[in-house]
Length: 95
Image (cartoon, rainbow, N blue to C red; front, side, top):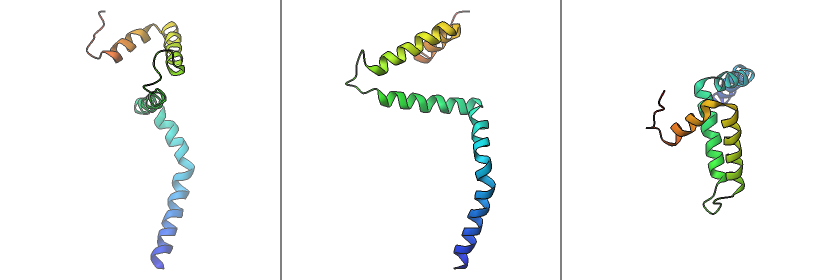
């Protein structure tokens, strides 16, 4: 009985400290390079899970992905090089 009350008190204290701050901590983390990398990884995993082997060329996923790539290539000159490096990490751009 004492243990349960103690655990309950500790749990309430931890919640009182962490809960109001967790959103701020998450926002701060997601603005770091590690946070952005995590968001990119989770997004890529989600998009790839959307693509099934039977949904080959012309699928909604592929059309959407190609359109996003086209728009990014138009708005960011560095994007094309980043895509090439992502597809072939051993490739080095000649500068």
